[in-house]
Each structure stands twice: as structure tokens, then as C-alpha cells.
Image (tube, rainbow over all chains, first blue to last red):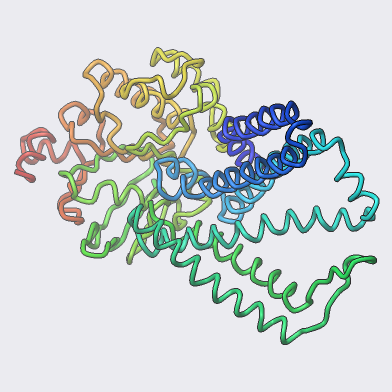
Length: 234
Length: 231
């Protein structure tokens, strides 16, 4: 699995570098305009970081679609690797590349902002809360991508053609998202207990939704791994 | 001598097409089998099932006694008829890739083969011509000590000189402990290396036998026999 991650990251190296350089150059330009643009510069820096995240998230989705629809699939699916290894490596690679872009974007924002926002946050937030935010960030990436990868793989298996498969995956994603939201709400109603995350603010987490998300992730991860290993036809 | 590959009533259907219809085929250890047939006869479908990247609709295919999966992928060395290497790779990266993923990969042999094929390890994969890419793919595939080699059109799109080079590489690097399946349209060029041949038509194996026996029984070369069967 380590080797899969290594080659995935190597393959996306230019994309990651390109996005990071764009963010750095964009922020350096904004730094020259801080005095004249006032609040506009950090706002634009935020947009720049957000845009960079969208691009890297799309690149993370292509991690899977390249293998499902292009000739590169012959390289991956003839390796003696289990579906779980393939799936886990894809997710870890995505987390690493999204985190790199996020760290670069946030660092540049802090430099532009001269650390004002960061200081304000650190004064309010305790260390365990910061860890919670980081874990939630990783969890959001992993669970969202797992859901999307599942839809892509089901679309590929059910609808063989490239265009039809991609459109089909989107429709499956749309329909399953509705079903998932409905079930999540039902779980929250079934287990309405709340866990308080933050000692000062009213930040809470619903137990039912949390259990539902974890169970859904487990099922989708194993199902996608199984489908990749046993059902995908090239 | 045991059967490295056994296929029994193997079928593969797509929505409106049956690519394989109850194909039966066996390959013994130490043999090179030529799987011959016209376009759309089911050759590649059969090879893809054996390589573990396509799943049969019905029937059974066993490699070393196992269904295609993680284990069989570790003992099968497959040369597909596609340009599957990453475009960012240099030749030496592709060698390293195979070394990282296949425990039976022989790095020394790969560099010897690269030299034989006159390929520079520092060349970029995307800068290679079709013939050179074919040579590189074959170098990677033959550098493994696999139990079964599956070569899908190894001579496709390469010039006659390169064909000779590729054939020499196949012959020189084939071990008696291994087996090999080769598909090709260029029967005349390659028939000398076949121990066995199987003719496939419309997804069915219509004729299979020892290459030498077929030649002497029918008093024809395999190429002539091929033309007769598929005329």
C-alpha cells in the first residue's frame, strides 16, 4: 500500500506543486496590496485558498476515475493488491494532497493577515479542540471521498461506457446523497443525545448522526474495496 | 507436468454481445501456446479474464489452481495491448515500479533486457515510439520470474526488425518452469516458437493441439492452417 501511495503522489506532484505555487504567488501579490485594499486582501486570500481546495479535491476524484476509465487501470488492477489496499491508498493520498494545499493556503493567509486571525483562534480554542478540528477535517475528506468513490465505482460497473458511466455516477451520487441525508436525519431522531465538543461555545455533535456516519463509512469502504477487486471490468 | 491454466466452459457476455461462449483451454507448464483468431473472436477477452481484470459471466478459469485474484496476479505477468505506463515516468521509474510491486521482478535482468532492446533508462516514456514502448513493456513483463506470461499482441504495430528483437527476447528469456500464452495476427512471424496452438472463433475454441503435430497431420504451416480456418 505504501508503494501505491508513493506513486500516486508522484503522479500528482506537478498538480500539487502548480496549485501551491499559484496560491503562494497569488498571496504574495495580495501582500503588496494589503495597505490599499484593506480587508479585501485577506478576503481574496481566503477565496484563493478555497479555489485551490476545490481544484485539489477534483484532482483527488480523478485519482479514481483515471484508473476506472483510462488505460492506467491496466497497471493498477494487474498488481497483486487487494481492493482494500487500493481503496485505502487512494484515500490516504487524497488526504495528504488536500492537507498539503490546505497547509500552504492557511500559512499564506496567516502571513498576509500577520497572524491576527490565528492568534484570535488560539486564544479561544484549547489544544484538544484543535485536535478535534484536525480530526474532523481528515474525517470529512475521507468520508466524503469514500462516498464519491463508491458512486464512481458503482457507475463504472453498472454503466460500462465512459460518458454514460460518469453521468450515471453523478446521478447515483445525487440519489444516494438524498437517501443518506434522510437516513442521517432519521438516526439523529432515533438517538437525539448530544455531545458537547466546546467548553465555551455551544458546539455539539449528535450521537445518532455520528454513529450513522461511521457505520456508513465502514460499509461504503468495504463495498467499494470489494467491487474494485471483484467486479470492475476493464 | 501440471496445467498452469485451466478454463472450463468460460463465457463472458456484454449487454448485446457474447464475447466468449463456453471456451475450454488448458496450458501445461513449460509450454508456449499461441491463441489465434481474427478480430473480435474473443482472444483479448480470454486473456483479460486470465489476467484478473475482467470477470467471467459463467464457467471456470483457474491459474495454478486458484481463481484470478491477488494471488494469481502475483504469478501472472501480463502484457496488455494498451499504453498503460504513466506518462510522467522515465524508463527507470517504470523498472522501479515493477520492482516495488512484484517480488519476482529481476532488476538485473531488466537492465540487461533494456540494453538488448537498445533502450535508455533515462528516456521518458512519453517520448518513446510505439515500437520502443512495446519493447519496454516486454522488458518489464519478461523481467519477472512468473509462472504464466500472457502476451496480448506483442508484435502489434512494430517494424520487422523490432519484431525479430522481440521474438529473440521472448525465446531467450522463457524458462521451462513457466508457461506463456501469446495472441497475434502475425502468425507467420511467430509460429516457430509455439508448442501448442488454439484457434478461437466467435468466443469458442474451435481447434487446439500440439503445433508440430498439427503441421505434420495437416501438412501445412500454422499460418496456412490459420488462413484455412478463418478464410
